[in-house]
Length: 278
Ligand SMILES: C[S@@+](CC[C@H](N)C(=O)[O-])C[C@H]1O[C@@H](n2cnc3c(N)ncnc32)[C@H](O)[C@@H]1O
Ligand SMILES: [Zn+2]
View 1: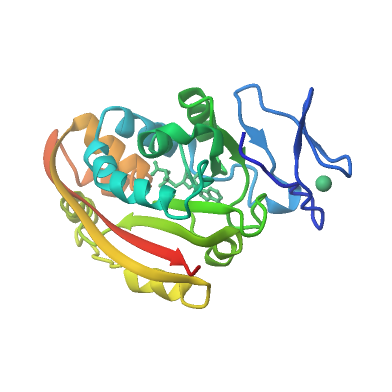
View 2: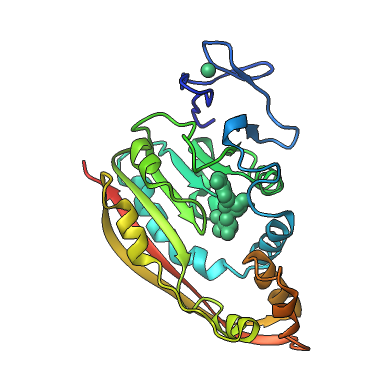
């Protein structure tokens, strides 16, 4: 399995498998949840009792992905993922997915590397899906905005797909030559749905902000690609798109959809590639 470090403050020793779970040399012990993920979250790292995405958003994202809505995006990301996994020349490239959610992107992009793949998320519901879907990988309940339970300079590839992107922690764990792939919604992602529900669809380009976030780290910006696709959504697809992007919360916004049961939408993502100098 993916080598993890003890999350107890100021410990950071390697965690080794024991009969009953994982333990570090100082005796800190962690059980594996029945559903197959490791809970490494520390009390001080919880933002709230119900941390991470809401169950409704996780379920909507799971339906969205399992019904194939992101298949084209996965195909688009695949060559980038292959190149990132082989860039440092490791036979077993260590890959970390921050804010991995329900876990579908891991096996789609890194199928042959289950042993050295680690997905991190704050939602138990999401990790249950992830561990069920790809049991050979390592799934960890932790807050990606705090210290990651991963050793310095030990990771070949970090992905953050619509997830967390803690620049200083990514730069701490990245090996020389490691790549980081970040995907965020592009400014026209679901614009038709947003214009309909919010009256004015706000177009926000996040690329500059992300490049700025990494500018003070050892990761250099390498490449920007945009993925874009038109898709006809049915009523369930519209509901899931709203729920997984938190737009279902506002009833007034939902009401504006009226009796729309089908809609042509744009799906679009900005994909940014960073690399740590050798
Ligand atoms: C939009 S979803 C994307 C999930 C997945 N990467 C995908 O593309 O399907 C964002 C994910 O980030 C997780 N998340 C939010 N805050 C987090 C944090 N501080 N640490 C770890 N995960 C977090 C949420 O629980 C959610 O699963
Ligand atoms: Zn420890």
